[in-house]
Length: 118
Image (tube, rainbow, N blue to C red):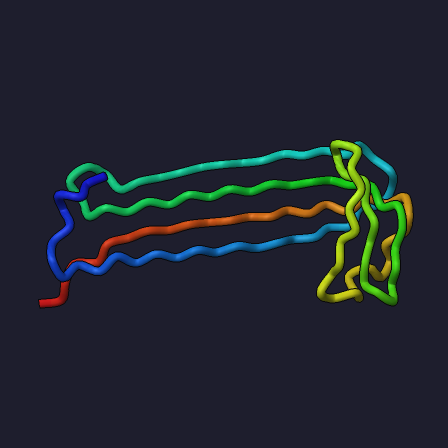
């Protein structure tokens, strides 16, 4: 963890970021779920720091669309149904029942130590 490198007055900076991406795909293809995880840490002898990234992608079949409410009913990779409300209903323009919706959710956490200013 390199904690021996931390001195009084140093600043610990943390940042948490999350993002969601949507992609509408034509056709009734295979529903799927994939995930990706990765981590990194500072080299020995340097100020502590670490990063972690997690990303999950779900491909679901569209069963119904309610343009007025901005919602879409999807059947996910494990057979479950979920109603998804979009912040921007215009994203549903061009989407049709029988198409697929791919949702990718990504989280990233970063930690870094900045030396004290003298």
